[in-house]
Every structure is written in C-alpha cells, then in structure tokens.
Image (cartoon, rainbow, N blue to C red; front, side, top):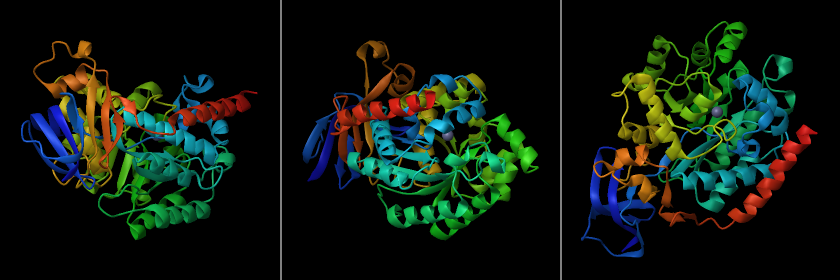
Length: 451
Ligand code: ZN
C-alpha cells in the first residue's frame, strides 16, 4: 500500500513536455512510486484531492539570503546601487544572532512553501556570531523542508580594501574551520537527503583570493559544491580590474573555481568567450530576474547561456533585494524578462518552468532525483491554486496558463512525501509565534540602527 495518493489531478507535469491530463500520483517512502490515469487509482494510507488543479514538480530555489527578510524594503537603502544598498545594510545585519536567524529562516521557508518551492539553498554570509547556519538547519528540520544551506563568508573588510565593515567579516581560518565542521556535522551525500551543505564565499569585493583558493581545495577534498555571486554588477567589474587586474570571471577562473561543482548567482556581465569557457567547465547559473530588475544593473542572457549548454536555475535572491520569495512569481518574471530581451520565440512557459525545476536541480548537481515527478524521483510537488476568475477562458494549455494567467499560489505542497500546505494553508505549527518574534526582532534591529 502506498503512503500518499494525490488524486483528481487536472493536469500532471512530470517534467515540462512530459505531461498527463486527468491523472493521479502515488508516493511511497518519500518517492514518487507510480502515476496513472483517472479511474485506475491505487490504495494508499492517506489520500488528498488536487481538485482538478495542475500539479508540477516542486520548484527549486538556487539563490537566496533569507535573513534579509528582517530588513525587507528597508527605506534608507532601497533606492541606491548594489554597493549603496549593501553598505546601508551591513551595519544592521551585524546584529544577527541565532534567534534572529532561526526565526527569519522559519518565516522564509514558510513563504517559499506558499510560492511552490520544495527545495531551497540559502546563502548566509554575515556571521557576527557563531552557529548561525546550525540555527537555519534547525528551522528547516522543524518544518520538514529540503534544505541546501551554503556556508557564506566575507573576509575582506574596508581596512583591507573590501566593501563590508570589519564587524561582519571573519578571518579565513575561522571560516574554513566552521565550513569543515558544518560539512562533517550536516552534509548528507546520500540519495533523498534532506540536508546538504555547500561552500559560498560571498563576492570578489568581500572575499580575499586566499580564501577563494582554500575553499576550492576544501570542495575538492570534501566533495561539496561551491557557490558565489559572479558578474552581478559593473561596480564589481571595476573593482576587480583595479584590485586584481582582471575581470570577475578571469578572477573566478584564476582562483580555481571554474569546475562542475560550482554554480554562481546572476552572471550578468560575462563576455561571450567567458560564457563559453564557464559553460565548457560545467559551471551553472542561478538566474534571479526580480532582483536583477530591482537592482537595475542588467540581467542574465538566459537564452544565450542555454545555447552554450549551461545549467540555468532559478533564484529569488535576498529578501531585501527582491522583497518576496515566491518562486512562481520568479518563474513568471523569468518568462517575461526572457521574452522581453530575446524576442517572442526565445522563451516559453515550459522553458521557464524547466529553469525552476530541472535547471535548478542541475545547478545543485542533484538532477538524478530532484526537479521531476517521474517514478523514482523524490516526492516534492505542488498543486497550484489559481483563482477561477484569473483562469476564465484559459482552456488550451495548462502550463502556459499557469505562468501567464496567475497569480498562482500553492494549494498543496508536498515535501519528501509530507503535506506541508493543504487547501492553500500552511501546516506549519509554529508560524504564528515565529511571526510575532520576527516582528519584535526586525523592529529592534532596524530601530537600533536608526537611533
Ligand atoms: Zn545574492
């Protein structure tokens, strides 16, 4: 007998292009066990109706900074350049502690569930106090989210020619010792893992060369993946030319990061030859369309990256640069922006959904299990709720309708075979308390800086 049967699926997307109308899906031991057509449903211990809604693989978030939801749409910093925005916020972020990180992660994961996300990375690169990623992992385990935190870091303070103040940087030995501790304690390379760790020095203007090289060596010896921001902004380009005498991508290659264990956020300003080199090295890209547009310094050329064979995944980026964490909205925005830049034949809704699922799974080196609903895949899925008014007249293509008509939000979200959103409501016990705490902590952090 199966553990869970999702029945009454109006349209089932196993992966974009492999789709079944009027279907069911059965789950056993956290994996998709079988799918079939209406009328052939098997028996299961628990049954849930999708109410004729469209079901897709859960969306996968390849770049985020959840702690930033403590400073969302923060007025004094919100309308500057990337460097203005960062230097305005670093002094507030130096107040982060375990409680603040736990509660911001908890609220961030709840928001992601409602937007159809079932696996997320996170990039916490401000470590004014120890054990902050441990607090994140506790929050993910309390909820039951599939979590791929990255050990972010900054080692280059203003005194050493970097952008951040010394209060939010650490020395390389401290960073690397904590990175190894997190790998040893939490990284699970086994199939179906709920927690994996990657290493993520923040950016060329906040991390020194030695830390980049030593982190790449640790990735090699530990078999974990590498993540960083790359070619996000023209100020970064200028900084790299002045400090290192090479472009951000040349610097990335020089410090030993151009390999198939790396995925990078943004990748807006590479040259054509740089794109070809990183594509052939197997580097993936986390595309963050809303953040790119709000920061206003360009966006990744997704169609061009695809034509070079690069894995392109989706990310919402930080809660204080994107100000939301709906992966549905990011997928729709990727569709709009892709067509705006590349023309009407450059991207379809299936392409955008593919970026958010299989493309993201490739970025994480996990596409053997994640990003599809074919039997054997992990049981991470979403039944999408779209208001009937929004869908009125959309009869021909449920996938185009999903991203074009919206707004869509999760009606059911299943992670590892467990129902975490049902009838559009979160089944996350501690959320009300977490929101009260979040308000108290975020008000205190913003107030203490303003006064
Ligand atoms: Zn980012």
